[in-house]
Image (spheres, rainbow, N blue to C red):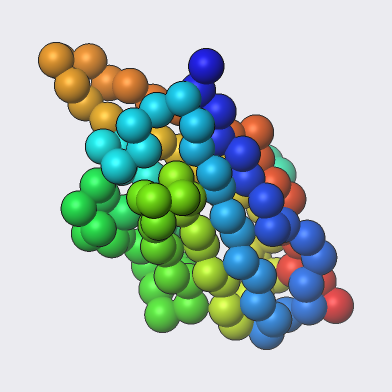
Length: 119
């Protein structure tokens, strides 16, 4: 059974920092691209940051220079360091794992963790 379990969300003041973590199990973690998505109330889910199996990274323009994604394959973990947080970063953040093999997309989601940026 595949599980992605997020942790690290919470309430933070504008300008503050949070570190989200996602631990995967039930998959060969190192073979998967990992990503963080977020969904704010009334908005579509959007990609925040992703990291390939080889460590290449990609960021949404809105978080470039503020957020950093990293992975530790030995621990089956992907992290999102979020600095200089803004109220518009408030959302539920989801961990995603995906891999295309044998013509099929294998994709999994975590349950989400709430991030609230407010004074």
